[in-house]
Image 1 (cartoon, rainbow, N blue to C red):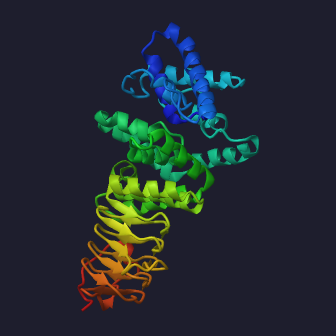
Image 2 (image 1 turned 135 degrees about the vertical axis):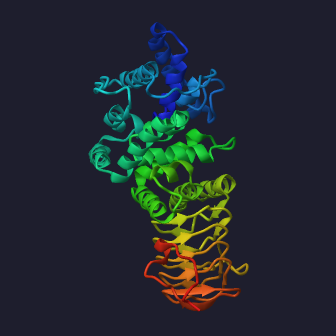
Image 3 (image 1 turned 30 degrees about the vertical axis):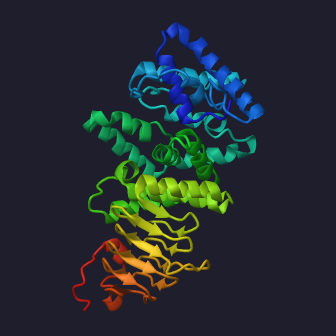
Length: 397
C-alpha cells in the first residue's frame, strides 16, 4: 500500500460507517489488503488495478459508493477513523498508538503522534526533524489562530461544518491544510485530487519556506484587505491567496526540474482561479492580490516581498524575444487595478502604479506613476504604499 494520507483515512472510515460495528475490523483489514494488492499490480503492470485503483487506501475504499463525510463530532465516525489508523499500524508490525484523551473533538494529537509512520512515511533519520516540526507546530501563532477562528465559525454557522472540518480542523498543521485546499481546487479528470495532494505534501516537506511564505501572505491579506477580518478567510475563500499558494508548488516543481508537471499546475491555476503565473517567475513573500481576476505574470518576471496588486494586472513582455523580457518589481510596490507593466524594466521599491496605467520604462523608487504611457506624477505619498493601499493621487500632481 502507498503511504497513507488524509484522504485515505477519511475514505476508509466512511466505507466502514456503512457497516455494523462487528463487521468493521474484518472489512478494514480487507481494504488494506486490497490496497496492498493494487499497489503490487501497479508496480508490475504500470497501471491502476481495474477494481481497487492505484494502490492507495482511498482508491480501494471508493470501489463502492461512500456516504457523505460527517463532522468529527460524530463519535461513530471518529471510532472508524481510529480503527483505520490502528489497523494500518498493526499491518506494518507496529503497536497501535495509544489514544489520548479528547480524541473525539479532533484527531490532531493522534495524527501528530503517527506523523512519522503514517503521514509522511519518512525514514528513521528524518524522525528528529519531524519531532522538531511537531514542537514548532505547537507554537505556530498563525495556524493556532486559524484553528480558533475555524472552531468559532463552525459554532456560528453549522452549515459550513463539513467544509471547515475537512479544510482546517482535520489537519495537524498549516502545511497539511494548504496541501488539501490546493488539491481540492486543482483536482480534475486529468489528475486526481489524491495525486495533487501527494505532490503538495512532498513540496511542503522538502521546502519549509513554502509554508513560511504562506503565513506571510495570510498576514498580508489580513493587514491590507479591508474585507478580510480573520486569518481563516484567505485559506477558505480568497482565490488570490489560493492561486499564489498553488503557484508556489508549481515554482517548486520548476526548480526541481519537473517542468511538464509545473506547466500542468500553471494550466489548472489559470482554469480554476483566472490567474496565469508562469512557474518560472520568482515571487516573494507577503504578497496580496486583491480580487485576483485576470492576473498575468510572465516567465522572467520578478516580484519582491510585500507587493500588493489588484485585479487585471499584467507583468508581461513586449515582443517575441526569448531572453529576460519581463518586469522586475521591487519590494513594497503597489500596482493598481488594470495596470500593465511591460518589458524588462525595473519598478523601484515602495512605488505606486496608478490603476489603468501602462508602464514601459523604469520607475524610480518611492514615486507614483500614472497614465498611458505612464509618467512620474509625484512621490509615493507614504513610506509603504503596498501596506496602506492608498491609491488616490491627491498631492502628487
